[in-house]
Length: 352
Ligand SMILES: *Cc1c(COP(=O)(O)O)cnc(C)c1O
Image (cartoon, rainbow, N blue to C red):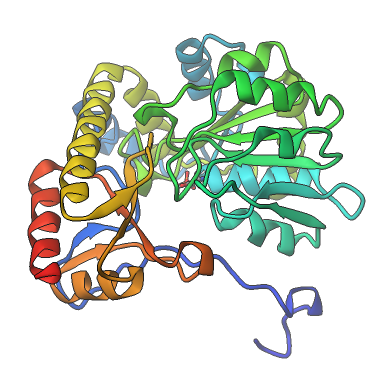
């Protein structure tokens, strides 16, 4: 920390993204990216014609993309917000809906960024414990009196709440914003977008990074009541109005024209996930009933860190978290069956 950094941030611990080592080629199963390239329509849309326009600012309203998303999700244009990755939306949401009087509730084990944003803005927050099977108890969020943030499916457990359970949380917090982070919803959970028509306190946050093969494009979006979208725009226009660049905007629109391609990719991922679960359990692992593009698994023989390090030395990267409650586990990104077979073979070598 330099002497220049504001004392507001003296104890801030930033988020640590999954490692991207350059020392060798790894089978990368640690950042939950899609193994599939963007659709051909996206590749065609990000063309030299678009590059030639990079001297011009992108449309700050992003209306072409917003309109395409509104059609896809069957909501009004006033119900859609777009942003530079969904992290941006989460950031804006903590800025917009939390302060020293209004804190945040989120699961004790979840996406690490929630705590970082809460700390960044000096917000009081409560990390709500999970049940012993790592599931979320919806009742723990009733009458929260605080902004509620839940990843559904949750990360890194992969466990999902049902629509009915989320609706109970919404009903029990009519005066507070409930943010449902659906980064992984397309791999097998139920989206609560339809509930945005009924509950004006719900924000559904989604990303192109996982199920639309566009992590490098940085594109996220939110669906919510017009009032909440307007609040997010207040923050956006007070920080970075041009938060989506031209090439990403073009890619985002084109990808919606090729929904079938992504549906097929996501179906494949869900199938490979079930294959991986069955195979790794044969090797003595236990894993949660993940609805995401990753498995959360622990061996009955090797500890999480030991397994992670042994895999790394064999050229396979998975994600290990040091948190005491989940230290026996690793998170394994579901990719192609060929790459998963490498993981399984290396796991076999480690166990023997
Ligand atoms: C990956 C992820 C995000 C962030 O995605 P970006 O759109 O790439 O910023 C948000 N929430 C969860 C739970 C994630 O896993």
